[in-house]
Length: 169
Image (cartoon, rainbow, N blue to C red):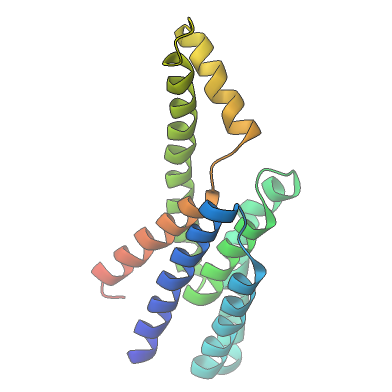
C-alpha cells in the first residue's frame, strides 16, 4: 500500500513540475518524463514481474494511441506527448487513458479561455473590435502562441488520481 501512495506522490510531483516548466519555459523536459517512464517500468516489473512489464507497455500505449496522429501532425509538442506516456507508465493503462481523457477536457477549457482572453484584450485595447473581430484575434492567438498544454495534462492526471483515490482503487 505504501508503494501505491509513493507512485501517486510521484504522479503529483511529475504533474506539478511539468506544468510549472511548461508555463515558465514553454517546454516539458526529457529529464522529467523519461525517468518517470523508467520508474513505472521498475515498479510494475518489481510488483508483477513479466505481467507487470506488459501492463507497463499497455500503460504507455493507452495514451499514445489517441495522441500519435495529432502529435505527428504537429498538434502539440513532444514533451506533452511524453508527459502523457509517463502518466500511463506510472499509473497503468486505465489511469493513463483516464488522465488523457480528463486532460483533453481540461485542454478544451484552457484553449477556450486562452482565446477568449486574447479576444477580450483586443476588444479592451481602445480600438473598435466587434465580436467577430475579437473571435478572430482569439483564434489567431491560439495558433500563434498556444497555451501550455502540460497544464491541462497535469489537471487531467490530478482528476484521474482524485477519482482513483475516491474509488479506493
